[in-house]
Amino acid sequence: MRALIPVLLALPGLASAQVTASVDGECGGPISMEVSGLTPGGIVHVVTADELGDNTVPTGVCAGTDLGLGRLGTSVSMTASPEGTLSVAPTIPDVACGRNVIFFDAATCTRSDPARMGGDQRNVTFNVDMGCSGEDFTDVFVTGPWADWTDEFNMTDPDGDGVYSRTISVARDAAVEYKYMLDSWASQEDLIDDMIAGRDCAPITDYYSFANRLADDIGANQSTNDAYGKCGTCGGGPVDVDFTVDMRCAGFAPSNVALPGPDVGWDYWARSLTDDDGDGIWNGTFAAESGEYLEFKIAADEWAYQEDLIDDMVYGAECAPVTDYFSFANRLVLIEEGLEVDISYGSCEACDPGDVPALVTFEVDLRCSDFSPYAVGLPGPDVGWDFWARTLTDDDGDGIWTGAFEFDAGAAVEYTIALDEWSAQEALADDMAYGAECAPVTDYFSFANRLISATDGLVVSNTYDSCDDCVPAGADCDPATEVELDGRCYYIDGSGGACDPGYELAPQSAFALMAPDAFVGKNYKNRVSDNCCVWHRDQDAERQDYGMGAECNAPGPFTAGPVLGGAGCTDALNLNPSQLTFCMSM
Image 1 (cartoon, one colour):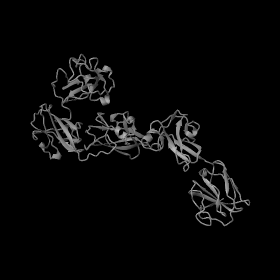
Image 2 (tube, one colour):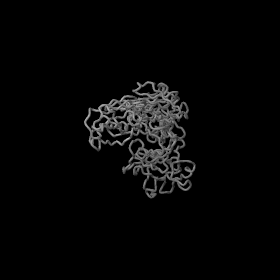
Image 3 (cartoon, helix red, strand yellow):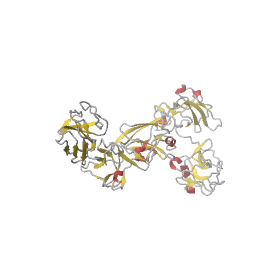
Image 4 (cartoon, one colour):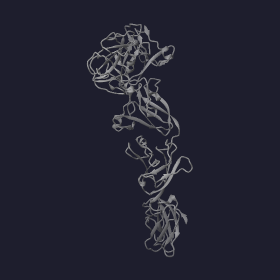
């Protein structure tokens, strides 16, 4: 044969009978081509194409004649026999298997109908990299509906490079559904998370019980190159990922922010962030395995808060695809070199604080100081250190001064606590030098000012001249309802998680520090409870492990108090309207 460019030149001649052709044989061997109806001894052009179409002869006597082919491939010329026939048996390489072919009589400008070389099948080689599978296995298989999901097609790795291969004959134009499995279905690859995260390698999926691969361009590509159990290729080792979390729209100002997830056993402190400039935007850089998926969520203040993205996902958002749409919704990212994750707490959208003012309430406890001031102020650089720009009041004379002020949402507010028109001012430089964190605007020896990120509804509780809480000596506790411990007053009540003014939720660990009979003879503070497990400060992380016995949900006085495991309360989380609640004085 002699190779020609795909431009056909016609020779004049008489019309002949219809050109007919038969093509028989399988890929990888001789293909029998029998043609009749040609001009005796005439020139025959053999033209191939990957697909059918409406291309025509571009020039010459036969210009405009329909070829019945799409984008043209190769063209060779041959000579018909004296009887007007052609009989050849070429060996067709894999790359040409399944192509369409016509036989064009240059003398009569007639052609045969298109026929396929090698029939309607095509050899496809499946390749899968097992190097990052993390599985123990003996045999690897490729399977799919074309194999009745059996283990008929086992794969081999003769060179030991971890890439297993198998060549299979599949339908020429069909999209091929498939997946890889191990040891005759002892296990199989799981691509559901990949698809949930927005990847596209396993589009035959319901996103929760199966995800199968699909090769829909098998006519152009005769091999697949996959990594077992994931879209893309095996990871390239650990890489650093930068996380930025915007807390300005969270509705509270956290003391700490973290990104727990199942890879660290939901350990809160495994990936904790920092906000050194107090602008409400927290940052952290962590190492993760390239090519792997990282599931996580944003939490704050040691699990006192965690974001809720369920509604976002129900309404069509995509940022938390690991979800059942009613009880949890966790974020998922694919780790890649140079990845930067920029997210906002509690939302799939970017935080936009805008110009809406944020009302912040300040509480300053002076009970542990030596002062009885007539005025308490919160001066700062934003008001030119004017003492009277933000002054507090103590209307009930309990030593805790309060005031509420408006700021731009998300604004970083620097301030100090001063008394009686600057006659006294707190000094926190020593606290900071010894590791405290409450006054981060400091040179550690001559000044130390407090800093908050303004969030609407934020309550800031400070102790004058200290980063620690004030614990007044000899607290004046109500003997009928309260127990004193380390200068605080503790009580239990059927208040459903609410505490009286001047009180806050207490940790359940305080019960272990009290005498066993501490609550004997005491009564509910305000009302009887309706559930015996104790609502406490740290229950989001610890759950409820203390409960009342037989006297719970009935009027006191008590003959016994809450005990560990009481009323069957272990890892409980009951949140009834009149839930038994543990409170302590601030």
